[in-house]
Image 1 (cartoon, helix red, strand yellow):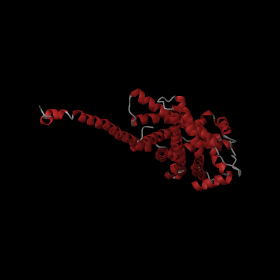
Image 2 (image 1 turned 90 degrees about the horizontal axis):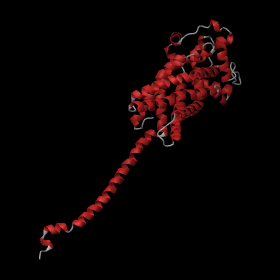
Image 3 (image 1 turned 30 degrees about the vertical axis):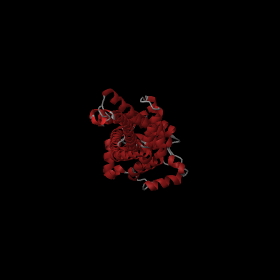
Image 4 (image 1 turned 90 degrees about the vertical axis):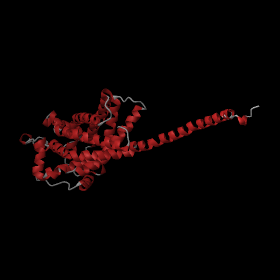
Length: 354
């Protein structure tokens, strides 16, 4: 009789089930441990992604990108404002025929020659203050509205994008209107001094105090209606066009979310935004720049509608597109600089495409 202990083959077979059993047990626990580790890794990854995609991170990135774009293109904004104001004083005095209208290049070179090159950045400080509110609010609001309207779907209809763009732009501009009003007042001071007129303000803080002293806190929102209308139209052109063109180009060409797609989308966004926003921008600038009485009431226009009617009646319909070229030339590089900076910073921090 063969002993089990004397037969190594039988000995190796005997504990087989137990070995298999322990192997099965360890293999059953092994996937569990692996799953737990994988789950832990999966749970850890969105921390970085969520941080870069969070509300405040998106807000700060948009403000920083907008500040870069504003500083680079601000001279064009100043030139545009000067062009839009031309004809206003002459129309009031009845001397519109005697006024020598100057184009964008002549206006810019005139500012450099008559006031100095640094005057091209006059008013840039309140403009940057404005973007702390305006750009941050419009980007995060559009993102929130887009996610809400999508409701988990990948498709985002054009009307939904337009609704989100109008809502985000209108809200952001209403909140930023005081800074925009201060900016317009400072931009016109160089022109007033050359015309021999007494300066109204000497800086951003002084302009703020003067506006409040004349019209109270509500005076900071003078011209806010055309301001909000303009911003709604501009963002309908900018945010909606950028988002729609970007998705369209990536879908039709198969291109990844890259710089080329950003450039194409931002150029289209700048053109549409300038076309839709220039008339409202002219009205906004004139309403905000008009002199006021001691109660803060405008002396030239009763409101944005009255300004629109007077501008068309005295200077013709195309006066609403006065300054269109510098608006477009500014919006194209502004939009390009902003979106490239915005997308690049987000990508560097680990966020997905906007």
